[in-house]
Picture 1 (cartoon, helix red, strand yellow):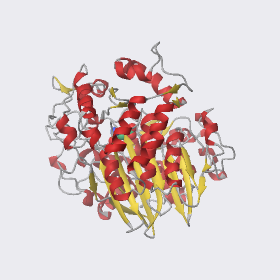
Picture 2 (spheres, rainbow, N blue to C red; picture 1 turned 135 degrees about the vertical axis):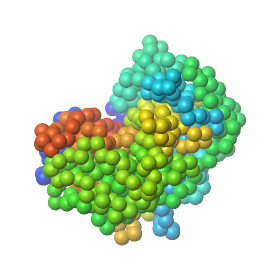
Picture 3 (cartoon, rainbow, N blue to C red; picture 1 turned 90 degrees about the vertical axis):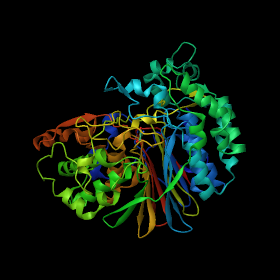
Length: 582
Ligand code: GLU
């Protein structure tokens, strides 16, 4: 089995099926492994540096950089370039990312926003036909869903400010693997099987991802991607401009325009794309300071609202096995999602009242809406800044794919980065060995609500679609304590909030907190992870008036805790992640 390669390379690492998973007895019945069949793990510890990603080969690439004295950003770039090859369904050159970085040299947090943007030609009715939103899949699988990729510009910017190793060095692991080939993993195979029909409709994708018989490559098949290696070589030598100008950019545009439902991306859009640095959005929870990217992501803002509301309830005392804790968590989610739907969009285009949404007095008023033994039903948005009457509710759908990387280097720099091409295999448009995103379906498909009020997250030219990605860094006494994040579309917000409550309130180690069953409300039904002990709570929740659903919640949470000079890492047992460090 492929994983054998990973054993005995001298680093601390957790592998699939590692024995001796230590879960405290008090939380045993919440071990989601029991019913859902994935293998639980033990937290990984190290002293100096660590990287956690969703794929063992990507983690190994990041680890190589750290061992060579590279920074957290160097490790994440090397890992990301491998993810684009070995976990192509989730993220890659054709997509975008959000990063939050803590620099040990000045104690500052910085955000790198490499989110895709709408083409200059984009109009508000992009996803409407005859006055109605397009069926979601039709919108996803089209040239119209493709935004200007942001990833490489973002990595280049982060490297210019935080890199230590030479840019071209970071490309070596991915180039080697693309040439030599890598084994198709069980998860990639399963995702290929699920998306087979959609991939078949795109000849370039079908040629690479499916065998000559049109079936997904089996687990263990060695897949080579010389086209991807060639693109990486060009970018390694010439920088991200080799991607954003010239024949690679022209091929991207041609592929988008050749689709049966053509898009309007242009070479001018690629040439004009800029990644942005932003001030992080931060908030306090029980004395810890938590930071992440601000809008256009709604993720950290919503997590901070949830925690700001939960601060009014005794989560630590209730513990993870209490119905009451699930109730409060779901109600806090409901309230945060109600605000998110109304207020959050690209701040270059709409005023997002971030400060007012995080004002402790406002969050106290929101918390006061929660009844201890009765569900709210659907929460209405609050009015923290007098904007309520001016905004309408949108209808963006987010389908989980995406990937999260956490890295800490030997100098104490910390990076938390979530990277995405949106849906599994993005738009399915495959060009030069990588997939193009469908991130523009993160916009509200309609521009107005039924009352005719404009939706903040409507499509506009050059605008970045609202995201849920929530890469976060938590500080304790001003020093980095946790780096965490996850894929999962809008469920990311609940995955990350759950993990933070698990560590900060329930004092679980990061691996245990990641493994806790997923739960919460996105202001519709109260959802619990299918096949976990939380399902037994459904009758009690229904008794409190919760409409409930048991659902698959395949989070992909990766996290690192820095505790008294020791690094403790966890990777989500629901996916194929790996943590390595020394
Ligand atoms: N496109 C989504 C977002 O930006 C992420 C999708 C996912 O996590 O699968 O929030």
